[in-house]
Each structure stands twice: as structure tokens, then as C-alpha cells.
Length: 229
Image 1 (tube, one colour):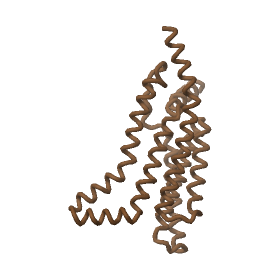
Image 2: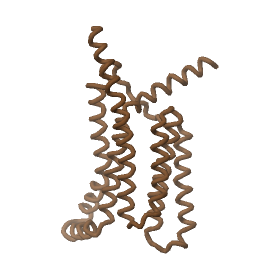
Image 3: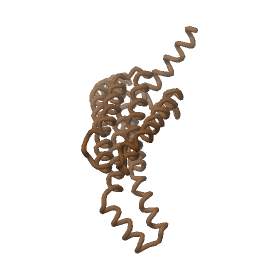
Image 4: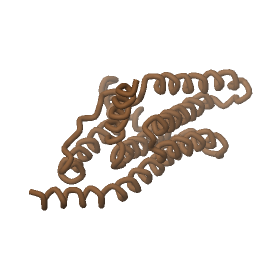
């Protein structure tokens, strides 16, 4: 039993190492900001006019491809930030300790399952309440709000699992903010933008604070390693 507990501690310690420097949060923050921005663009009249103009001047394939490329911007940006993140770790942060390849599955399966259930529970509640809100975009707002709450739970549960308090607080604040979004007198496009930017501020802010705390320690460790050589 003791050996099993020791192995579990080693696994968690390895998993925490991936999140200690805050770069993963910065990557997620960039993704959320661009996700909110691109979805805000889709709900704007100028995008609808542009899409109809493009559809009239070109074929349907080109128009659909343009929309897909717009929606792919957050993913492409996140992948780009990920490469920068690996380069920073290899050049500075993990110079002394060496690179650690992150596990494909860091979030425990039970956390993922509960997160999905939270999302579907929110959507189900939205469908039940939709007759009380005749707004045709109500269900879209519920979808985004439920996604925010689900993501918030995932971060908070992951923080609890890996004993990273900042993830717990980011998850709680982001989840509460996702619900509070419905109180604001905003259009759907503006709500999506505020939601994405709100998550971005929380994630990037948390990541920068973690990086600020980690950087001096890493520089000191690297300097000691160079002196030993």
C-alpha cells in the first residue's frame, strides 16, 4: 500500500511539473481570447454581409472554407504558442532539469466525465427554461455559459487533484463569471467576447504570476548547475 501511495505521489508530482511555470495557462488564455473574438465576429452584421458577398462572388466551397479558417484561428494560435512554450522551457526554464514530455492524458477521466455532465446539465436546464425566454439566441447563450461553467469545474477539479490552488481559484472565478454573463445586458456576440476575454484575463494573469515566481528559482538553479560544471 505504501509503495502504491509513493507511486501515486510521483505521478502527481510529474503532472504538476507541466503546470508549475504558468505557460500552459498563458496558452489557454490566448486560445480563449481568440475564441471569443472570432465568435464575436461571426455574430456581427459586417461578417454576415461579407460572407454573403463572398458567396455571391465565389462558390460555396470557398465561402465555407473561409468560415472554417476563421474558426481555426484560435486553434492555430494555441499551437503556435505551444511551440513557443516548448522553446522557452528548453532554452531557459528546463535547462537544468531537462525537458519532461507531458502525458497525453493529464486530467483524470472522472473529472472529464463530470465536466461533460455539467455541460449537458446546463444545456438541459436551458432547454427547459427556453419557453420563458423567447429570445432566439437564448439557447446559444446557455451553450456558452454552460461551456464556461464546465471548463471552470475542470480547472478547479484539476487544481484540487494536483494541489495547485491557483487553478482552483481560476476555475471558480471563471465559472461564476460565466454564469454572471447572463445578467449583463449584452448581445450574444458581445457576451461571447466578454466571456472569452474574461477567461483570457484570468488565465494569462494567473500564468504570468506563476511564471514570475518560477523564473528566479529556475535561473538560480541553472546558475548553480553551470558553476558545478
